[in-house]
Image (cartoon, rainbow, N blue to C red; front, side, top):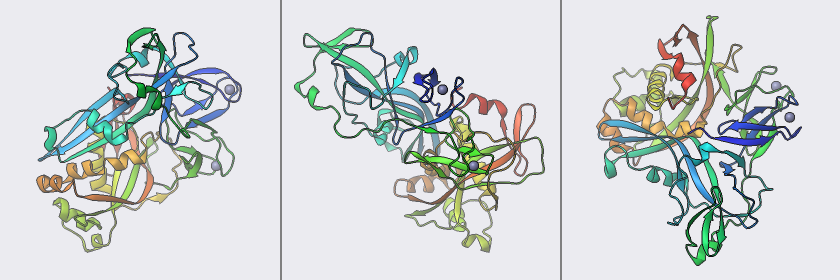
Length: 403
Ligand SMILES: [Zn+2]
Ligand SMILES: [Zn+2]
């Protein structure tokens, strides 16, 4: 589902239409670049057919991403691209269907008036809402890797004790209950924040692509992510290369330790997962890190790259800082990558049944993270990481996760 949202340049007021995932916005009229951010998730409003003053806004959770399941000796995945009703009111449609796709939404801002009903669905609920995959209720582990999680509000109004869908002016049914007026939001709501995309260190324009979640400054060679509505510096490293025809692709290097069972060093992990490697003495004190794609890509490829890169490069030392070569945008937040770690462990494990059985009680603690740029040489159809010979079809990057 491809969604669009209307946006006005805060600098010059020019109207623009953005993709749902656009964060880095360059205004073609005044030349200013903005970066859009929200603390928890973005909120969009579907347009009403006519401006009714007393409008209720019913939240729907919009989720696009992958549900991974681990069970027995298998790791499965399922792509989800759907909206879910956030309140259990049968009069209202269970999903928004394709409607959001057919119209341009607008951001919810502090100026948005109306009665906003409370969202009651949490992230964890989406896994259940998204349905069961794999082998039903006996699944040992489920993980949700979101590419896009947002709230979409459906406008409603009351007419003669009936609830009317304000998008198409159709009657939905009787007003469901007296509590309808009691479920509106109270207190502060998180709204969209628009930042000027300027390097906090040197004032230079930050660079990125439309859906980048990390912006870089080529002037002072720094990288930035948004934390609590402001740019914060990000620890970055890269692998050096002598190749001139290369593109740097971002990965998250996430250093973890696990408990129950306790897995702290790289050597511990090899024994836990039963990997066919001879444990070197140095690995007993080597921290355990995983190298996971920091970009949106098909789930099968995400797992393959995570497995291959983590197996090959987890003990390799890299150079600090961003490389001076073309950079592919980082588009997958590290929280989402971190969410995938248990699934990646299951995928890597040689003694799968044992490892998958331990996943429900295994606790993962993130000790450290870093954005890692790895050089891939561009051939006609493929991108090849020379050091490991790992290759990916160029097309896989362009198409993203939903081919
Ligand atoms: Zn402008
Ligand atoms: Zn700078």
